[in-house]
Every structure is written in C-alpha cells, then in structure tokens.
Image (cartoon, rainbow, N blue to C red; front, side, top):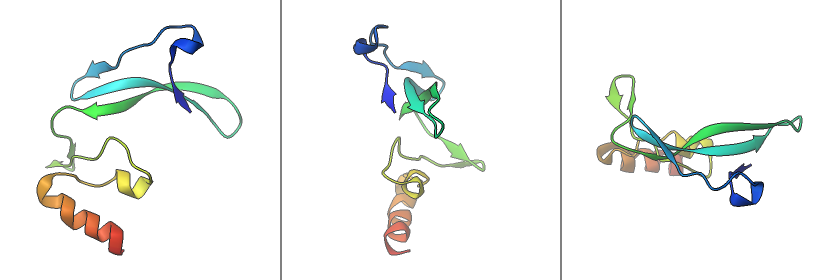
Length: 86
C-alpha cells in the first residue's frame, strides 16, 4: 500500500479537496495480487455526521475499532475509556 510518488514517473500529486475533506491517491494490492488506486481521506474539514448527529472520526488509526471513534470533544474521553477498558 502506498501513496503516489515522483518515483512512479507521474509526478507528485497534491491532495484534492471535496466538500468537507481533503483526499489523496492511494495505491493498494488486494489478496490476489491485483493493484488498485483509490482516494483516501487525509484530513476532514468541518464536522462529519452519522445518524444525523455530529460524529468526527480520526483521519487514521492503528486499528479499525479506533478509527470508528467520535472525537467530538464531549464524546471523545468516554469512548477512549471504553476502547481501553472494553
């Protein structure tokens, strides 16, 4: 898995902006060895929403369960404690 680089002969590409997020191109290889390109979020701009409520996840994490955490100030401490203890 990797990001587009100058070494790949296509030049360094900057992040692009879409409503509410900055994206960057990401190359990955699936379990069968096929290579694909996709867009990945590098930074959120403003609030995100889930189920009609403000839900601000981190841009990256070391585990899936840590990626699906609401970092909105009033929720973040409680959810971090739940991940650590449960």
